[in-house]
Image: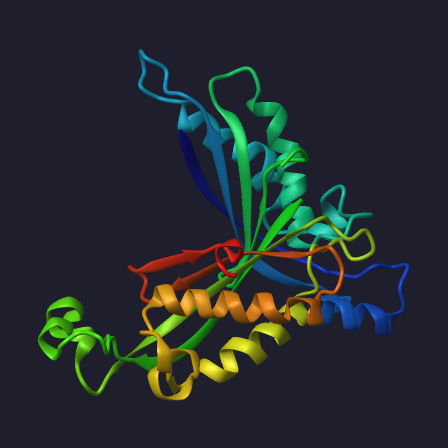
Length: 138
Length: 144
């Protein structure tokens, strides 16, 4: 069974590779390469997979999942300039792809050992662009 | 591997009418979608692609190229058109959203290599939201 919890955060970022020229960055990333940054209202959907506990009828306590999402993601990302204030985006370009991978890496260790296992991370950068990551093996 | 999904918008009109059926059968089958003058929708198209992250850009797909491909093959020819009258494929088949999804998949699949000549990214999923309540998903593997 899959269970999805949604949470939101707002953050700013710049998408550019310092090893490339300004022209190359502008061609690759368009307006997202503006050095002063710009922001999004990100929406994160985290999906957990598992079997309901026969006693509680729950795969995992959603309050616990909510707390993990807040500790690991919202507290770190919300109202931050990702490139300057959130590791590893001092050296990793904060594209939605890399944000999804980083969120997976933050959450995955917190979701082992219980009944619910991390299944997927979906990051909406805007309503018209989202990224899914299901871990390295998928 | 990462899956990136981009949403595109176009408005178009259509009429559901199967020429091999009688007028009565068409009315019974399609209801108000069979009204003779057609009707329209704000379609939302989702295109999902899959690929590994490109180290240099931190991206799995060049969105500029994807946008240009979808604009040229789908949005421009379909937007503000009467699908039955103005899109060749729908002279032969009924422009249901099932068939619309397959036509979009066919077009993107056919020209995919012109935008993405390498092994990655691959086209993985086409999804037509005819309205917010009716959603149609097609895998390019279903298309010959």
